[in-house]
Image (cartoon, rainbow, N blue to C red; front, side, top):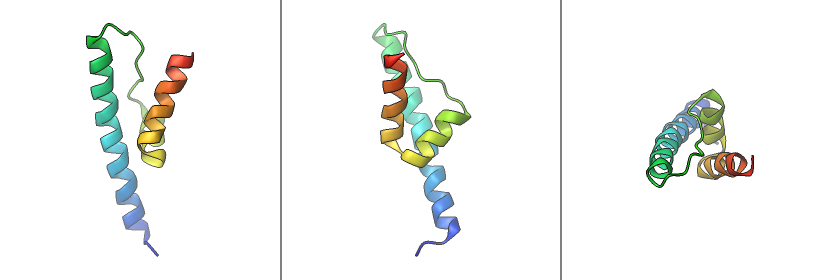
Length: 66
């Protein structure tokens, strides 16, 4: 069983890579003229840290839905 430091490190890596992915996707969409973007904030940090890339897809899905 993993200890808490491995879980924390896993969470932080997913969250940091998630923020980088959100930044890159936002830049790509702005270059294409799409004005929808996901903000880089504590909520998106937690979502990408807990769920990983499916969480990022969820954030964009919610943003495009609204």
